[in-house]
Length: 377
Image 1: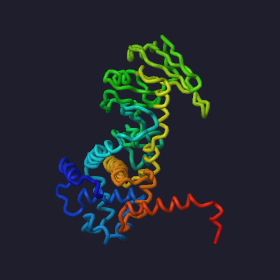
Image 2: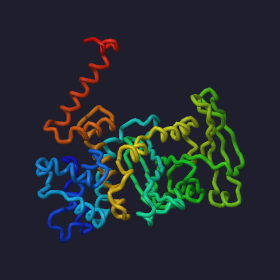
Image 3: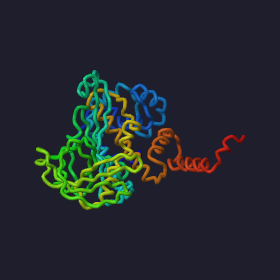
Image 4: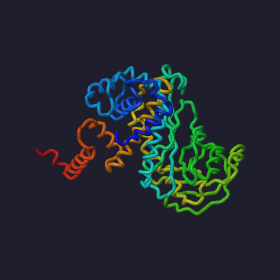
C-alpha cells in the first residue's frame, strides 16, 4: 500500500465528493476491501467479510477502525462514484508506464506500440438488464488499449455486450508516431483514415470481403515467411471513399504453424517482416489473459453499472499497483508469481524482498538437483 499515491487518491475523492456525509466507511476503506479481495481471490461479499473479520486486528494500521460489514460494502459499491477509482487507476498508470518504457516486447522498435482488444465478461441478464448481449445472455465488454512495454493498460472503455468493438476507436485520442495493433473487429476504413490523419500508424488484418487493387509489389525474402509486400488501393464502393490514399498489404506465412496471414498498414518505412512481428507481438500480451484469469472479475459483488465498473477499475488499479511494486522493488519473478506470492503472504511480518529471496534460493536449489534425488530418503 506504500506505492499508492494517497494524496492523489484524496484528490480523486474530493473531485466527485464521494466521501460526502460519510462517517465510518470511507472510499479508502472501500478501496482497501476490494483490493484485499483481488489480492486474496475472494469471490463474494460474504467470503470477503468473513476473511476481513478474521484478521481484524491486523487491519488497524491500514486505516480500518471499524469492522467491515458486507451490507456496508455492498452499499458503497452501489452508490460511490466509480470514477474515483477510474481516476486512481489512471494516476497509477501514469506512474507505471515510465517504469516499463525501456522494456523489450520482442520487436526492435523505438516507437510506442499499443494493442487494442476487448474481452467479454458474462453476467446474469435477469440481474443486469442494462447489459444485454444475446437473447438469453448478458455481458459486459471491456475494451482495452495496452502498451506492449510492460503490458500496462493506457485506456479502458467499459460497455454492455452489444456495443461493437469498432466504436472504441471513436473514444481514443491517437498519439502521433505510435503504432496501434488490432484485429479484424476494428476494421472501419473511415476510422482507420482518422488514425492516418493523426500521424499514427495501424497494423490490422483486412476482412475477406475487402476489395483492393494492387499498384506495386516489392521483393521479399521468402525464407523468412514473407509472401508479398504490396502497395494497394481500396476499390470498394464505400471503402475507396472512406480511405482514399494507398495502403500497404503484407502477406506472411507462419513457419511454425503453416498458417497464412494478410496485414494492412499505413506505414511504408518499416521492413515487411517487422510489420508481421508487430501483429504477432499482440498474441503474447499478458493483460488480456489476466482479465479473466487473475483480475478476479468473473464474479461481481454487485449488479448495477456503478458496482461493476467500480470492481473493474479497482481490479485494474491493483494490477497496475502490482506492476509498480514489482519494478520498484526489483523483484525478478514474473508478474503472475509476484501476485500469487503476495496473496499468500499478505499478512506475513517480513519485507517483501525477503520473501522473494527465499523463493529464488529454493527454486534454484530444486533446479540444480538431479531428478532421481527426489526419491532419496
